[in-house]
Structure formats: C-alpha cells, structure tokens
Amino acid sequence: MEMLLAVAQSTLSFVDVSVLQPMTSLTRHLILIVIATAFGTLAYIVGLRMIWHEDITGELATVVFASATSLCIAYPLVYLPSFRLLSRRLHGSRPYILFPLLGVVLGVAPVLIVTLRWGGNLTSMLSPESQLFYILFGGVGVVLGGAYPLVDRRYCDRQRIDGHASQSTTNQALNASGRSRRI
Image 1 (spheres, one colour):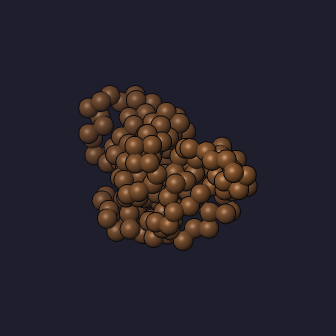
Image 2 (tube, rainbow, N blue to C red):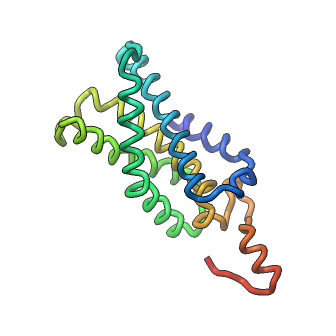
Image 3 (cartoon, rainbow, N blue to C red):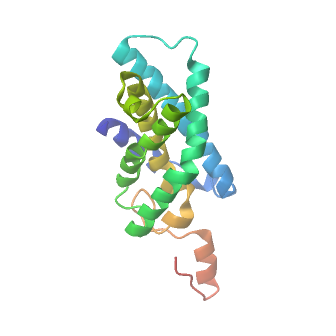
C-alpha cells in the first residue's frame, strides 16, 4: 500500500496542471471519476487474481457498472466534502499523503452502497466477496485523494504538490491590479 501511495504521489508531482486550467471544475471532476473507476477496476482484477486465483470472466461489466454508479453517488456526497474539509483544515494540500489516505478510508461508503444495492446488509460488508470491493475502492481512494489537490485548486491552491508555493491565476491577476483576495 505504501508503495502504491508513493507511486501515485511521484506520478502526480510531475503532472502539468496547465492542461487542467481551461477545463471547468465539473469536467475535471468527471475525468477524475472515470480515471479512478478505471484504476479501481484494475485493482479489483489484480486482487481477484492474487487472492482467489481467478480470472474475471463475464462479470466485468457488472463490476464496472456497480462501482461507477456507487462512486457517482459517493463522490459528491462523501469524498468531495471530506477532501474540501481536510484542505481547509490544513490550509492547503500539505501534508499531501493525508489526501490518498483519507480516500482509502472513505472507500467504505461506496462498498456500503454496492452491498445495499445488491440486497445485502451490514454483516455482508464483512464477507469475503466484499474484500474485492474494498480493494477496488481503496484504489479509487488513492486516485481521488492523490489527484484532488490538482483538480480542485480552489481549495488547495496555496501550495502545490511538489512543495513550491503557488498562486492561482485569479490571485495573480488580483495582486497585479493592487487588490488581494483571501482564500
């Protein structure tokens, strides 16, 4: 898990965030959900292979659909408010590692959605079958938490991931005009 977090952090530290600037906030969040779902599905397939020594056959579409729909419900209701609260408490995005860790912990919410949607109850969240969904949403949480400071700059633009202080273009324009804006 630590290695996965280190890879995510090092990968995201080299991302050119200027590509994200022309996009709307909604577009950035939708792209993040698609990437996180793909990464989580890959984690599910790897977990299925490593834990149960099975291949995913006809259930790939079901897994993708269930995880994508539960993520679309949980992201605006659980993940996004939690990441924003954390960034407000930290006054930026440092220490960076807390965002992916929070994403992994919050992975319980979409597992609950999947479990209840398929007719399970709270005790079925402890079943061996739910382990794969914990792996899936653990991977999703790493991606969501790792990319959140890049995607939602409005709450994390005081510090970039690589540690250099930065200002958003709005703050730069306000400072150039002699006014300042406090975030």
